[in-house]
Amino acid sequence: MKSIKNTILYAILLLAAFASACKKDLPVDEDGLLITTRAECFVSNFELLGTDFITVRNGVPIIDTVAQTIDVTVNFGTDLKNLYPQFTLASDCKLDPKIVGKVDFSDLANPKTYTVVSGNRKVRKAYKIIVKVQ
Image (cartoon, rainbow, N blue to C red; front, top):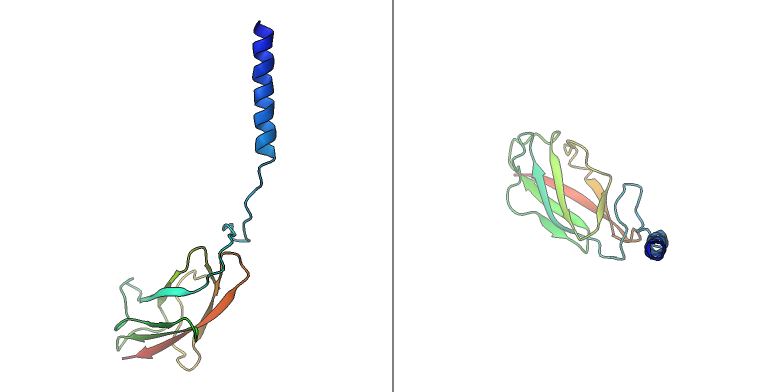
């Protein structure tokens, strides 16, 4: 009787091992982020922080998802060489290049460009950040 119970237990464990081995791994990108089926790709909010991590924006940023531009006005006297941009993106999207620290926005004639990449990693939209000083 004991050997039958052991055999059944081993059979169940063996089936569980096979079932987990057949499980399909979810795809991830080079950053370790999950690749999904979402093709949406847009910026929903934008923030600029100063070195004290307090906003330097003056008013609400104007995000044009068709023209792929973000117009933001900053307070007079803002140190444009030491700003921290923050993006709110559509679900499962990521930003390229990554923001790893402060960013220099002082060259107002040449706006910075950030690319939003969709969750399925197939759609890419480049957004220009147009900074104006009040």
